[in-house]
Image 1 (cartoon, rainbow, N blue to C red):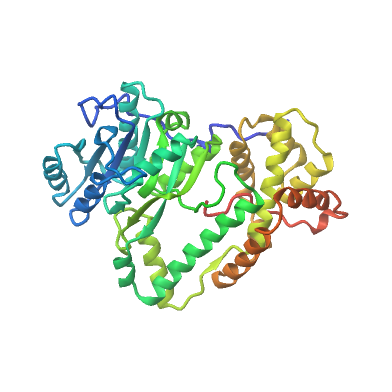
Image 2: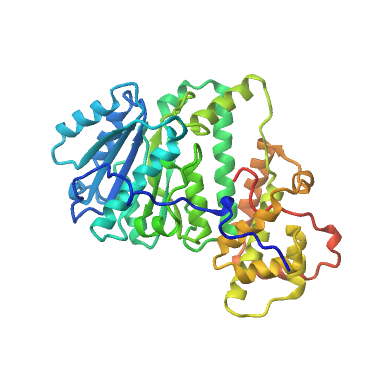
Length: 435
């Protein structure tokens, strides 16, 4: 009998909502008119916090008119601070009597004194508050204490949710003044990384489009601008309280449940470009890493455009196969064999996973579970310099933007079914190793 990875494997597991069982951060009930709860984790942000709060205060609707402050609230959680962040937030609240701003302080033990637990405590609290007033589609919106949201940040987020999104990732740019203080090599490496990621997101639209997240779109789903409905937050089990990349883990949980996620370019924030940050594995750490690489004149190596193209094509065929299984439509045995070879997993295992996966996102994670310890994936696809990858991706995006998707899909399906030899197939890791 095939050994299928249990759905509750730790690597496939979302977080758990603790908010209903813990002492509330805020005792005052939310207003019945509250549509969106903004959570702001803060640790020693005395320098930036007032700017962050001022931006949240001066919100306007999509017509440029002041946004009704009864429609949203803000919760600031100052954790393990050694400065006066909490006092600054309280003074700000007193200066803005029309703004619903709650300020809480907490000192966490060492094993939980990290951004994952703090953001989770806040998001769980926002969920608890919406549940208390029966607003399942209330929006939990996350930003950071060193981030300045755009004037239409709340309105644009709500517009995406009202348009059918379960969750929204905003476009995050770095503060231009701080970016200019970076040395030339760090800034160059960073801008190349941004360009590379953006081009990947464009290629994905052409080769494996999500009808709910088409162009214009971007590639970011991070805590500085991340929103989710209370209903979907509960469905995925809340935010996993990881020491770092907890925002990416929440995104993965959303994908596991096939949530309608929108990478919206109209939802925008500007964040700090400092190289000494508060959270591990965040933007600051990435900038510090790029700075060292620049000083050593190291090449930035990334996945090639050809690998990215192959991955998106494979994923699209796998998605089509899963959808056919869901509809009870017979699938081509030859196509199953070919996809199994690309994935380097047993054909019968692939069929079993297709039958047992209630969502496509879960199917992808189950396949990755079997792929992740196989060295051959790293060996078969050599990394290239980011300059080469960018040039190749630009060419691909330009080419595919001129091709009708239905024609491209049919043409490729005919090609893959007519392969004469499976020996020419190179296995492909369905999710990137850094995902």
